[in-house]
Image (cartoon, rainbow, N blue to C red; front, top):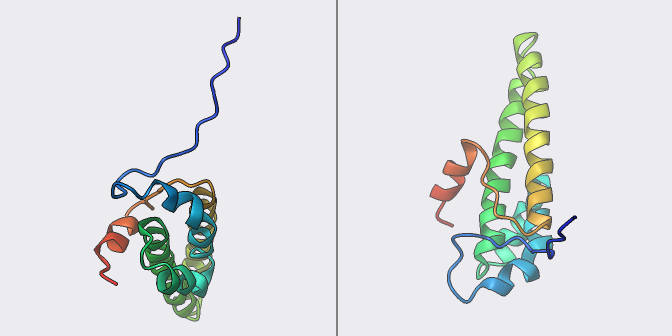
Length: 121
C-alpha cells in the first residue's frame, strides 16, 4: 500500500520571522542573481528581501570569479586549462544556484557561500 505525502514547499531557514512571503515573492529575482552581472538587479532593487539578497550576494561572488577565471584563461597552456575547468565549475554552481533559488530554497554554495555571507552591502 502506497502512502501519498502532501506536497510541501521548501522553506528558507534563517529568515527573520514574518518574512515567509519573502521567498514566494522574490524567488524569480533571486534566481536572476546567478546570471552573470544581473546579480545587481536583486541586490539593488530588493534590499528589504533577505532571500533575494542572499542569492544576489552569492551571484556577485560567482561574477567576480568569472572575471578572474576569464583573466587567467588568457595565460597560455596552464591558464587555458584553469580557465576551462574553472568555467565548467562556475557554470555548474550558477545553474544549481539558479534552480535552488527558483525552487525557493536557500542553498549555500560550498566554500564560496562563506564569503558571500561576509559581504555587508
